[in-house]
Length: 112
Length: 107
Image (cartoon, rainbow over all chains, first blue to last red):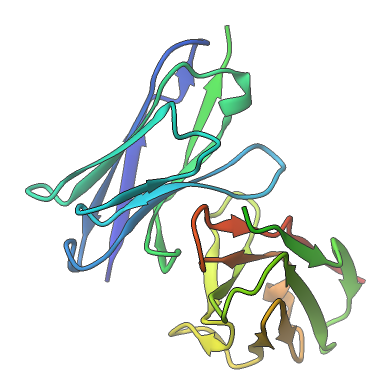
């Protein structure tokens, strides 16, 4: 059974950096792409980006502020979003590929 | 970016009904289309990928069809556990984009 477990700070101030990590267990890590998606409260889903640890793709709307990194030795991948504002308040999810498996989600609130 | 127009935005239905949700892409996506179900407070759950392929473990009352720019999710014999919000997603080209969702409510 594939399991994605994510963690990171849930409350940030404007201009700070959002950092989340997702640990993958129960399946192959290097054989898949790994994705970050977010969902503002009460709204729809937004694809942030994905990596297969050879290539990383980002949503152009966030590209200047986002980094997705991979640690294959730990079967982890991470999201960094710089200079956050209130508009970045959302539940952030990690997922495998297009979404066959998901993390539990992390609510990140940006507030002064 | 490819725009995904999903309709209706909400619908009311009864247990046992047949429900149809449509997604229209702003350009052809060659069946690179997934459907997700999301319940409040939970992560989305993949139902259908490649427009019509049922994800493992998903009940057969869910089906998908379509081609080109128009895709459909059908839920036949709606069950109480099917009341949720449904999203389509194109993964033909990045940035992958989602429809705004269809909320299926109990009539």
